[in-house]
Length: 526
Ligand SMILES: *[C@@H]1O[C@H](CO)[C@@H](O)[C@H](O)[C@H]1NC(C)=O
Ligand SMILES: *[C@@H]1O[C@H](CO)[C@@H](O)[C@H](O)[C@H]1NC(C)=O
Ligand SMILES: *[C@@H]1O[C@H](CO)[C@@H](O)[C@H](O)[C@H]1NC(C)=O
Ligand SMILES: *[C@@H]1O[C@H](CO)[C@@H](O)[C@H](O)[C@H]1NC(C)=O
Ligand SMILES: *[C@@H]1O[C@H](CO)[C@@H](O)[C@H](O)[C@H]1NC(C)=O
Ligand SMILES: *[C@@H]1O[C@H](CO)[C@@H](O)[C@H](O)[C@H]1NC(C)=O
Ligand SMILES: *[C@@H]1O[C@H](CO)[C@@H](O)[C@H](O)[C@H]1NC(C)=O
Ligand SMILES: *[C@@H]1O[C@H](CO)[C@@H](O)[C@H](O)[C@H]1NC(C)=O
Ligand SMILES: *[C@@H]1O[C@H](CO)[C@@H](O)[C@H](O)[C@H]1NC(C)=O
Ligand SMILES: *[C@@H]1O[C@H](CO)[C@@H](O)[C@H](O)[C@H]1NC(C)=O
Ligand SMILES: *[C@@H]1O[C@H](CO)[C@@H](O)[C@H](O)[C@H]1NC(C)=O
Ligand SMILES: *[C@@H]1O[C@H](CO)[C@@H](O)[C@H](O)[C@H]1NC(C)=O
Ligand SMILES: [Cu+2]
Image 1 (tube, rainbow, N blue to C red):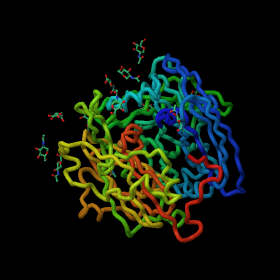
Image 2 (cartoon, rainbow, N blue to C red):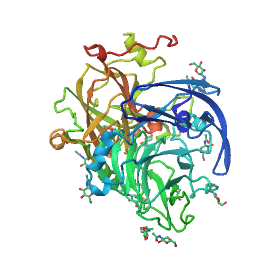
Image 3 (cartoon, rainbow, N blue to C red):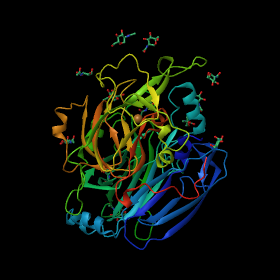
Image 4 (cartoon, helix red, strand yellow):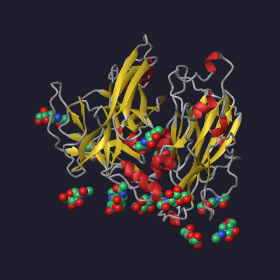
C-alpha cells in the first residue's frame, strides 16, 4: 500500500462546501491518477497527480449535495485518496453576514460579498517522498526533511529558480476578502502572516470563532482557518509579501525555510499599481516561538450566542487520560538502526503504538466481527511518571489494534498529556467523525485536582484538530453521537506512521437515524 505521505503530498483536493440550503444536486467528477513531470527548485521529477494537476483539482458542492467521483488509477502505486475537505461560507450565507455585521460599522459596509480566496500550504521534496518514508521506516530514523514549502503549490522568491513560481494574491483596495488557510503539509505547523496587514480570524475547522485580530496565524497540519483580510482604502504604491514558515518544537532537524507569495493590489481596471516595488516583508515569530503559539491558541473562543449555540458537554460520562508522545522499538536483530541510540523511532498513545490491521475496522465492526481490534484501549497510562520531566529509561512502546468502545451519545472528556520521551514536541491531534471543544490547556503535567476548575465550559473553541502544547496538556470534550469507527491521531504524518493513533468505536443509537448505514452494495469483498 502506498503510504499516506505521497498521496497527501500531491492529492490535495479542495472540497468547498457552501453552507446554503438549496435543492440538492448530484455532481459527477472523474479523477485520473497519473504521473506528471513537474519542475521546481531547478529540478524535474515525476509526481503522482489527479488529472495532471498540482495542487489537485477542486470539488465544489453545497451542503446536502451528492458527489460521485470516479477514480481511475493509472500509476503503479496503491493510492489513498485524501480529501482536504473544508467549508467556505457562501457569501450570501445569513450566518456569515450576521456575524460580520455585528462586528461594528467599520466592517459592516465592506463585507456584503467577501471574495473567498483559498491558500493551501504544503511541502516540496526534491526526492521521491515514497522513498523518503520507506527509508525512514527501514532505518528507524526521522525522515529527510522537505526542501521547500509551498503556497498553492508555489515556493516563491526565497528559493533558487523559484521567482516565477510565486503565488500572487490579487486584490483591490477598500475591500474585505475571506482567506481560507489550509495546512496540507505532512510534518510542519506553519505561522502565516501578510506584511502590513492584520487579519481577523473568524472560523477554525469550519466552526465560527469570536473575531480575533492578529498579525500572525498558526495553522497545524489538518487544520483550516478562515481569516478576513481588509485591504488598504487607496491603492498603495507597494506590494506585500505573504509568508509561511514553520513553528517547530521537535529535536530533530527540520526545514527552516520560508515560502512566500505576493499580495498585489490592482486598480479597478485590473492593472497592478507599481510592479512589486517596494516590497514589504512580514514579521514572523521565531521558529520556536511557543509563547506566541500558546497565546494565539489560548485566545481563540467559539462564537457563542443565540444564533450560534454552544453545546459543550457540562457533565462527563467517561474520562480518559492519554499520554501522547514518541517512543522506540528495539532494532530487529538482522538490521542496523539509525533511530535514537540505535533503536527505531515509534510513537504511541498511553504507550500503545497503533497497528493498522489489513482489513477495514469499520467493516469488521459493521459485521459484528471484532476480532481485528480489542476494545480494551487503556483509559490512562499503565504507569505514571513526570510526563514532562526526566523521561523513564525504558522508552519502548507496545503495539496493538486497540479501541475504546462508547455507547451512543456518551459525553467524553479526554486529557491529552504530551510527554518528553525522546524530546517533547507539539502534537496536532485530529479526531475523525466528531468535533471537540478545547476546554483547557496548560504546560507541564495536568493536575486533575486544580486544572478542571479552570476549564472553559462557556465558549471554548470547537474544532477537529488541535495542537497539544509542547511539554504540556490539553483537555477536550465531545459527544459520541456519530456511530462508526473513528481514528484519533497526530496529524504530523511521521508520528502517524510511527503509531500515534487510536480508535473510538461508537455504537448505534436507538433511533433509525442513529445507526451506522450499511456499506454500499457494490463494496468489493475480500
Ligand atoms: C496494492 O494493493 C494490492 C491489494 O492489496 C496488493 O496486492 C499489491 O501488492 C499492492 N501494490 C503495491 C505496489 O503496493
Ligand atoms: C536522505 O538524506 C540523506 C542525507 O542527505 C541521503 O543520503 C539520502 O539519499 C536521502 N534519502 C532519500 C530517500 O532521498
Ligand atoms: C541556490 O543557488 C546557489 C547559487 O547558485 C547555490 O550556491 C546554492 O547551493 C543553491 N541552493 C540550493 C538549496 O540548491
Ligand atoms: C509597512 O510596514 C513597515 C514597518 O513594518 C513600514 O515601514 C512601511 O511604511 C509600511 N508600508 C506601507 C505601504 O504601509
Ligand atoms: C501612488 O502613486 C500615485 C502616482 O504616483 C499617487 O497618485 C498615489 O497617491 C500614490 N498612492 C499612495 C497611497 O501613496
Ligand atoms: C536553517 O538551518 C540551517 C542549517 O541547519 C542553518 O544554517 C540556518 O541558519 C537556519 N536558518 C534559520 C533562518 O534559522
Ligand atoms: C529558540 O531558538 C533560539 C535560537 O536557536 C534559542 O536561543 C532559544 O533559546 C530558543 N527558545 C526556546 C523557547 O526554545
Ligand atoms: C496573550 O498576550 C496578551 C498580551 O501579552 C495578554 O494580554 C493575553 O492575556 C494573552 N492571552 C493568552 C490566552 O495567553
Ligand atoms: C530480518 O528478519 C526478518 C524476520 O526475521 C525478515 O522478515 C527480514 O526479511 C530480515 N531482513 C533482512 C534485511 O535480512
Ligand atoms: C544507549 O544504550 C546503551 C546500551 O543499551 C545504554 O547503556 C545507554 O545508556 C543508552 N543511551 C541513551 C542516551 O539512552
Ligand atoms: C517534572 O519535571 C519538571 C522538569 O524537570 C519539573 O519542573 C517539575 O517540577 C517536575 N514535576 C514533579 C511533580 O516532579
Ligand atoms: C531505569 O529506571 C529504573 C527505575 O526508575 C531504575 O531502577 C534502573 O536502575 C534504571 N536503569 C538504568 C539502566 O538506568
Ligand atoms: Cu505528533
